[in-house]
Image 1 (tube, rainbow, N blue to C red):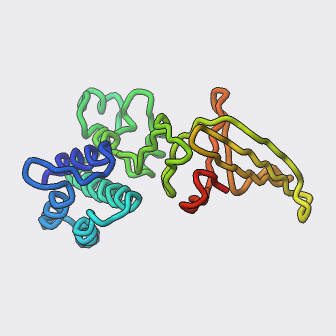
Image 2 (image 1 turned 120 degrees about the vertical axis):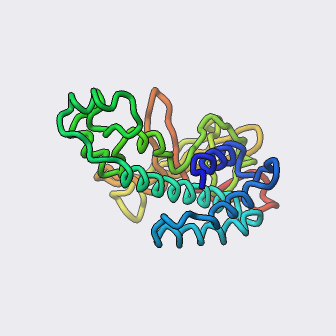
Image 3 (image 1 turned 180 degrees about the vertical axis):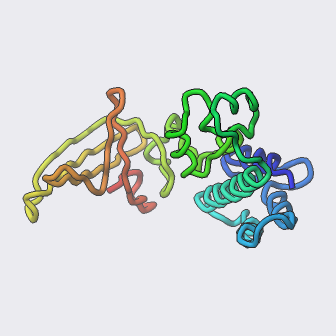
Length: 241
């Protein structure tokens, strides 16, 4: 099994919006399902069961929602990463003890232990080991669980339930008041509007500084709001509440 080829297919599918791309001979889901059916006998039983589950899910890929497709691709990446990491660990010899000797013996090799890289050292190397990262190869194949593109701006009327998106809008109303039922709870309400509709944001802050419901963080004078919202009924236009 060519794990690198499978990882490339997963990357392209994610970059193209999880559209079940058509390859030269077959579609993405068929290719992944067929490949995961032919796992090598060297895989352990747990990973083989994981592959079998993924094969069943890829058979239904065409009917899955976008979020389900994203999760399936992420789970496949994790499986391939775990298998590749086990192969590297089992095939590699014990790392040399002296750091100087290790650098001289493995200059620029992918199986070089991370702790011997310049700027890493034993302390940071131990933290990386807890993440399952032992070698340079591990680090190169430590793929992110998901990718969120905050540069993709979406009009309010085109927001899709369950997807993360960036909205650029004007503040139409801002109110801040103490909850009449709980004096330790402060509620902030903001009404945003763009050319397609409006969006209401709520933030609940307690006296001890904690927040629930909607959170925000400041970075470079920008405020990013993370929120939950209810998709409007078709008859209500673009207004959200």
